[in-house]
Length: 160
Ligand SMILES: [Zn+2]
Image 1: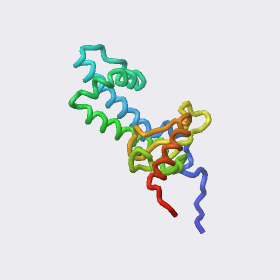
Image 2: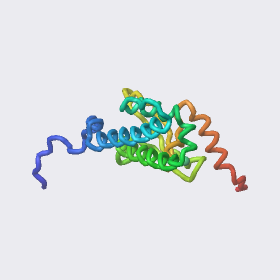
Image 3: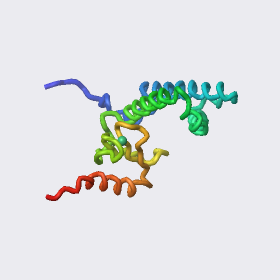
Image 4: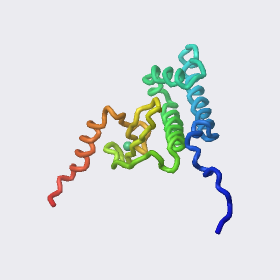
């Protein structure tokens, strides 16, 4: 019989996830990557760079999305931000907690999972593709997604 006194389960601190080193690190990485792309855009377009704030950087980059799309480094930027999105989701939802698999992505071969958030989370629940970060459907578009998924499943028109 183990006689170890268990005071607190060591891994029960889900409440502290916001302060976890991994989350802090991911936030810093997001800021660094967005800031470096924003400064590339600002330099080349002779604009004032935005504040080093994730929201401001993201808004700045979205405003210049079309210009970026025709830039030779666009692919690299998409890859970098895609990687960050994936690692941020892993940190936010470790061990698949709060993730429920809902089916196959109708757009690619990825898997769709629903990210259920706590009621006090400012972000809405959404369904995301585990392969392509830009395949995501907020709750308001779930009906559209359901139709797409039905269409892609019934695409074979197989008689049983
Ligand atoms: Zn997908």
